[in-house]
Image 1: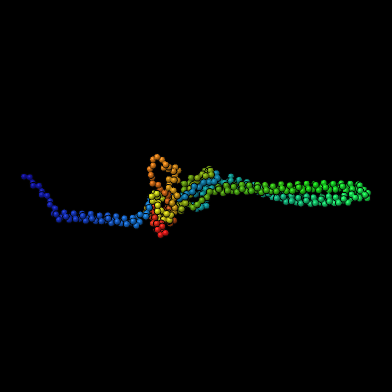
Image 2: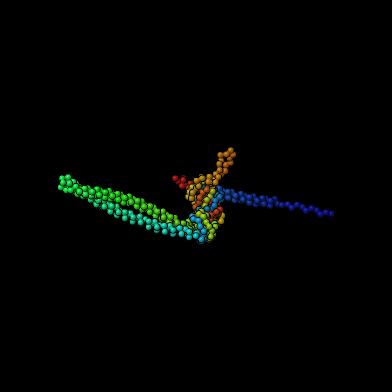
Length: 369
């Protein structure tokens, strides 16, 4: 005989109702928690969130300077290493300046020669003053002799006509008068020549002064070249991208290295055009740098760009075409970081960040006004 099948287990009705009640209570609890979370989020959004504009299209930047020589030459010394901290005025590179120093010495010698020429021209001018004074005195003497001869002729002429004096004496006096007049003419010519010579010497003096000025300018230029052989840091920062080596021949404008002003790092956040309507300079900013997880940095808006990024691209877009697709544009916003020096040393250009701008401060000021 086969065994009888087992009878089905019967669950009491009160047990089923108890389990359903527990499930209902759990569901109600979950719904309540979800509603509380939703209400809390809505309250937060209404109080804070709707005033916060956020973007992750943000990067740290610094106004780095490429260091390049002003003159050509061979690199004699490289006095900095990669990533080294430097101060403004520190010597970075020295070029071989012997050629420029020789030119400077030659210019100094030329200045000495031009100073000698100038001294000679001044002495000649002083001497010519004496010559002119002597010629003027001689002319005055000749004119006095001529007046005396004229007086003698006038006095002896009546006597000669009356026979009281011989004619030979009158002829002699006339001859002396003619010689005196000739002497006066000669002295006048000598005075004019001396005065003309004075003008020539004045021109030579001016020429000597001009040549001295040219020599001094040449010396100044050569000294600049000597000074430019010593390449100094234009600002405080750190050395980066050092490509210069000892013995390398460089031309003016050849990039030797870059100095990054790490103490002047700022942040550029590229916000959508739909986010910048309430942004103003001075508003509070919270920055989360990817390289410093868990650290919130403070800052403020320094300025907003005068145009979208596309306007300053190499090839700006032209939307005057048959087909058009609207693309949301982004506006660069410059943000100054309000951090301590210890934190700033950990920041380098190029790092990514997330930026949150609190627009309430400016709104409150606007409403108050």
